[in-house]
Amino acid sequence: MKNKGLLIVFSGPSGAGKDTILKRLLEKNPNIRLSVSATTRSPRAGETDGKDYYFITKEKFHQMAENGEMLESAGYCGNFYGTPKRPIEQWLSEGFDVILEIEVQGGAQVKEKCPDSVGVFVLPPSLKVLENRLRNRHTESDEVIEKRLAVAQSEILQAVHYDYAVINNTVDQAADEIIHILCAEKHKVQRDNNLIERILNNA
Amino acid sequence: MKNKGLLIVFSGPSGAGKDTILKRLLEKNPNIRLSVSATTRSPRAGETDGKDYYFITKEKFHQMAENGEMLESAGYCGNFYGTPKRPIEQWLSEGFDVILEIEVQGGAQVKEKCPDSVGVFVLPPSLKVLENRLRNRHTESDEVIEKRLAVAQSEILQAVHYDYAVINNTVDQAADEIIHILCAEKHKVQRDNNLIERILNNA
Image (cartoon, rainbow over all chains, first blue to last red; front, side, top):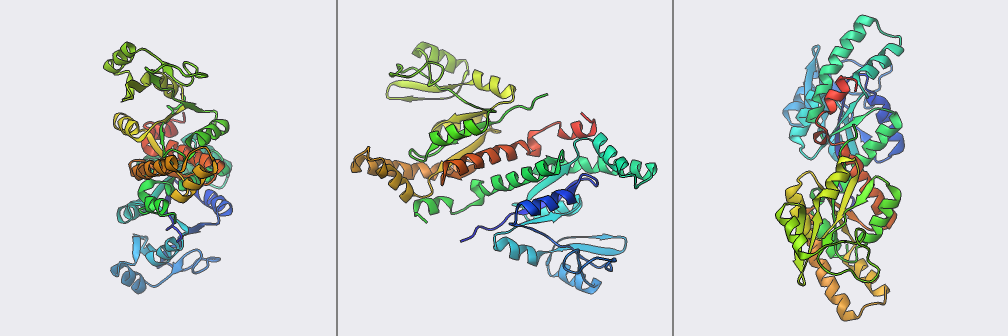
């Protein structure tokens, strides 16, 4: 029997490099699946239904939320965003590890509903490094950068609500550390109810 | 500032391959130190003081135990065995991870005194595999092997008191899994009190 996969709540301040790390993680570990959120907003150019988001109507969204089919949900600028439970449960039961890239409020909802989920928070090496990375992109004004840094500062404080913190010194190192965290979590005695039985019964 | 090392309580049934795994671990990871026990019994041929054991008198042993200088201790066949605290604390403060290879009663004492220690239990792939390994050595009678298997069976039940279980399918894989466990433990948010402060203050 294949073991159930792990549910990973993956958060971190904007600019910490979450997407790049996830991309590398998926390359390194084929056993990982990324959760796809549902939203009531319209698709933007280039967005694919079922890949970037599940694009659904407000009626459908509320119906799913009322039926308890959303792991977490939130409203933002008049639209709704949420994490459909069913594909996640399917993947977990097939033995895949499922990552939810999600902001901290949603992460807290998931942790409450799924206490055995694993919270991983990505941090920049320092606020100064984050600032340098933002400035070196040359895509945003000083004012925008100042605002993003202020937001990042308050987001970084949320790391205390997570199980693990991974510092993005390099993408490779951060991805490897997350792989090690998943490996360790799978060896937790409390996760494997019939471990001892299997060993003793030569299964 | 170098981070404090981890204290690892390392146990498992006789025949599971603890010593071989430890040897491989030390080869792979130079940041690990093995704790040396103190004993009141006499050195056997080939045993070195400070390497195999600290050989000390009963008076010295009791004095150390009374002064709280033993992390755990036990009597066996008229002699005493214990784990001196001082070298462990020294190594931990220098940033080394320290492994205590210890039976489960001693492990429980350490876990109580040091709740932030990490319990790792080594298991054979199955009781049948353990039996085959013992028989293939051709060094022990059937009767002795039966007795050892009965003891192993009761020891395996103790895995539930540990944080992690590692199955010794191969020595390399078991050693790697322990290295991953140590890596994950070092990324636990709760282990690093001033993590967020460091990030925000650009330390």
